[in-house]
Image 1 (cartoon, rainbow, N blue to C red):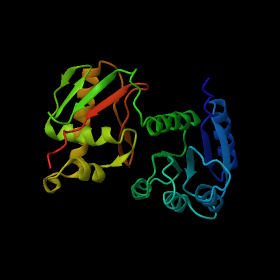
Image 2 (image 1 turned 90 degrees about the vertical axis):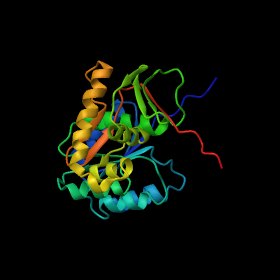
Image 3 (image 1 turned 120 degrees about the vertical axis):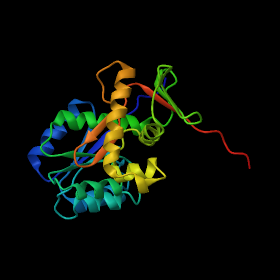
Image 4 (image 1 turned 45 degrees about the horizontal axis):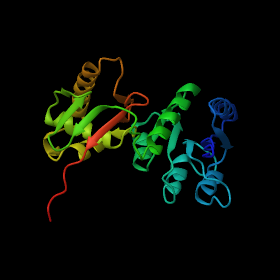
Length: 250
């Protein structure tokens, strides 16, 4: 008999005790192991010098912290671990959010927030980062053929322009990860000289309409993160296949 997997361990790094208490209660109610630190310096030590302690499976990290700030904690953690990190912040400046993403944050949640939203984001990020091996029992709703440059929804073609396909392709390859417009331009387009960042908004709008029409459900496959960018998020428990191009002969 296979032993049961232990619940995911979530580290909450938050100096506001009231916020931390609420998050801890919601996380435990959702079945997670919850751990709390209120200081950035302690968080750096916990994430980079684990010793005998089990590393967190995911960290919810406030940006404004005593000791080391959250971006410093994120930078130091990324030197030794790729375990997912979700940033919490009251900052509204776009540059702060972009810095967090460039340092390797997996998601970004602005205060004030709903604790239910935090738990939902945690589930999404953990699902994405723990599904390295696809579940063959799931049907692939959306399929990208990277040889023929075609998208299909349940076997039916989705009419996309080449730019729309390349943008969708870039998002699907990093499902759930938030990307800025500038990052998507670098990932999706070679000819960035004649494309500006706002063109990404237009392409995303068209992609949303086409995917929703092909899917037939009220689900936004591409999530907007205000002031930051976009993330690809399929419906829960559904697979997305991206068929890679064939290997080139040597």
